[in-house]
Amino acid sequence: MDGTESSAGQPGPSERSHRSSVSSMGARAADVLVYLADDSVVPLAVENLPSFSAHELHRAIREVLQLPDIALDAFALWLVSPLLEVQLKPKHQPYKLGRQWPELLLRFTDAPDDDVATDEPSLQFRRNVFFPKRRELQIRDEEVLRLLYEEAKGNVLAARYPCDVEDCEALGALVCRVQLGPYRPGQPTACTLREKLGSFLPAHLCKRGHGLFAALRGRGTKAGTGEQGLLDAYRKVKEVVGSDSECEAPLGTHYHAYLLKCHELPFYGSAFFHGEVDKPAQGFLPRGGRKPVTVAISLEGVHVMDSREKHVLLGLRFQELSWDHTSPEEEESVLWLEFDGNNEGTPVNKLLKIYSKQAELMSSLIEYCIELNQAVEPAAPTESASGSPSIPGSPPPPTQRPQLRRQGSVVCSRIQHLSTIDYVEEGEQIKRVKPKRTTSFFSRQLSMGQGSYTVVQPAESPEQS
Image (cartoon, rainbow, N blue to C red; front, side):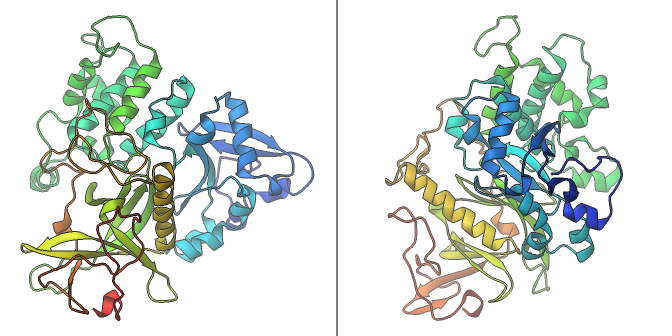
């Protein structure tokens, strides 16, 4: 955050944890480095940095970049490191939070002490998790679109946004158009694309292996994946939507097209958290251990994703869940998600237990997202064109937008890969996997008649049921 630290070399733990704070303690201006989604840096000279708020810093960035007013809502300041990501509120003071970073890591991560001592956050100008997609589609300023495009592209390439092969190729083709210009026959070729395939497709689609194990790891892919599939998709990119005109479209058109395609992904615009879930029992083993997961929370719902396999394990809209969390003082820090399901044809309530020291953060974000949705439109959900209820405050989906419902799609839930606690209500007792149901352990759910549950007050905790 403080620009006095050189980008070259690795400073010692004390220097890194204090963010080279010596230069910012005096009355003179201090250099602050703010990173954009394309890894470029905006240097700012700030007076009295320790008391400078995120809102003031946000305004300074907008002035330097000459961004329109919509950028105030579209973007937020984040403190980001490999161990933790935090979106700042306008009243937060970035410098002070940077100084408190080791305490935040100890509270919200399981990082070893050595990693805590050397971890250092950067101040980043990123998409505001509370910015609705419907407003994003109204943006016409090319620089704002470019920043949103760069961030979305980074999330796709890093597989934070899991995508099917077809969608990766379509998105990669738009990146080709932005970086290489309009498609010309013979330029580029599949061979030239192969040299920098990682700039267009996620890394796991670029890997090449041989033998049986490589074939097994590549299950679910199809012929044409890689440079040839990317080239075919690149050839189909039109310069003007709905027109065969050969004139070149402005880059903003392609930024917008990329974002529109990303909007088909239900977890677009999410904040991400780390956790673990129990693996289902296998064979004679009563417990299968735990697997690392990424929890994505947005204005539209919660998605639990397999960190290794790069696919969705569970996706829930807020109308479809109840939730709560337990703090480390009570037991291990856990986020509980409850949703409807079935067990061998029997309707049950399912409980998913997500182990994470960030459970408190996730629970608070879920609650706030629901409050924002209800503040926009506190009415009951309406039926969308697909027959499913729409989220409060969200516009109906565009009629032309395809729904991701491919068999085996990476964005479809894989509940069979999760170990859940299944239960029903029988009289005043909470029992596991018995007929009859529709009750809830948790009072925290979408209110105003929009949730699927009625409140139950069990005498026992979920672990004791």
